[in-house]
Image (tube, rainbow, N blue to C red):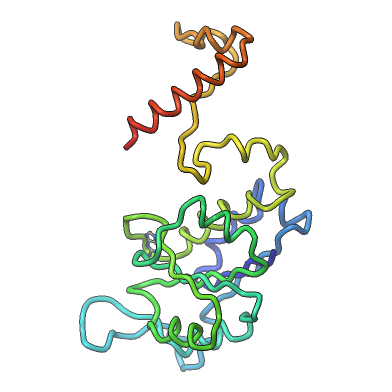
Length: 222
Ligand code: 6GU
């Protein structure tokens, strides 16, 4: 999979070389391309934002520079993801869908966002365009949200995780169930013992206990 991101802060994407994502890139499963939006500015001061028509607080990113940056990246293979707190909520099932894509482009807005005509234009040209938010809070820009999405998506690509079984059992599987609590050595830590049942070797009873615990946790965290 090819994953591109357009941003005025390319340095935000330095963590892509670490850990799972770094290995996925080294092994050729994913290829990241990070583009500096400002390099596509055509005006005197490499300005990328301006005041909103109609008035109001903040600055809006100008469409011209976004068009220049995105045009060469877009193809029939592309899913364009526009990061905005007003977008559709990102979740595990969306991550699973995007993990089957061949080319993702993350458009990282800052300020009050990107002139809406950028979205309108690529929709009108029949590209797949998605406005996505990672949760109900406001970030300074789409960069961190992109990193969250890239990590959640990339680890679902076959070959990225060492142990594919952890995908099947994990905490937020696509049905929305929460994972059971986990324990490892030592058997007793600060006078807190590991639950007896996990030492019993009775796999049926262990599975039952884990399912109950997962439901308890899900209720507590509602
Ligand atoms: Cl995608 N962008 C911004 N600026 N804030 C957010 C977000 C995105 N998702 C949640 N909050």
